[in-house]
Each structure stands twice: as structure tokens, then as C-alpha cells.
Image 1: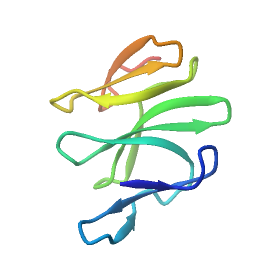
Image 2: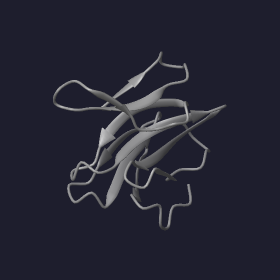
Image 3: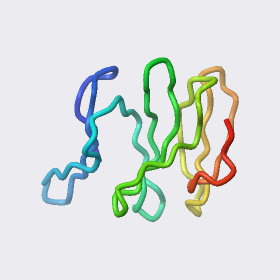
Length: 109
């Protein structure tokens, strides 16, 4: 998996298979950073920057659905999956650590 573009530039997310073939995952370009594949390999947690907001989202390529886990307030980043893939753990730049259900249920950041 890779993103194309600079750190603050619009990017697209791609899946790269074992032969090196690139397949775009997200049709909509955005400011995506730090894609992190779920333990089952079916979803991607990533940081999305929109204006002054930097939030954590989960992308499901099979359904082509983005689920927002955080809603502004602080710049969230450094996302990682729980071993069972049910939660995404992340932090703010001032090192406060949070977790949210990967399906977005109960998120209220």
C-alpha cells in the first residue's frame, strides 16, 4: 500500500500487489498520511487532513467506505490496530493516547 504525493499535497491511496501492479483504492484525492493495514488485511486506518483538522479514518476498500473515528479538536495521528482489528489506537501530537472502535460506533472525539 502506498500514497502518492507530498506530505501536505493531495494524494491517492493505492494497493500494490505482489507483482508490483498498482490499483487505486480511493477515487477521491485527499491529504492522506500514514496508512496502516488492519490485521486481517481488509481495512486501512489513516490520517486525513482537511483544512485545520487532522483526524483518523478507517477505509474499507471492499465497500469503498470511509469511517471517521475522530472529529477535530486536536491533531490526531500515529494510528495502530489492536491485534483483533476491533479497535484503532492513536494519539494526539501532545502524546495523549486514545482508542476507538474501528467501525466508528461510540466515537465522540
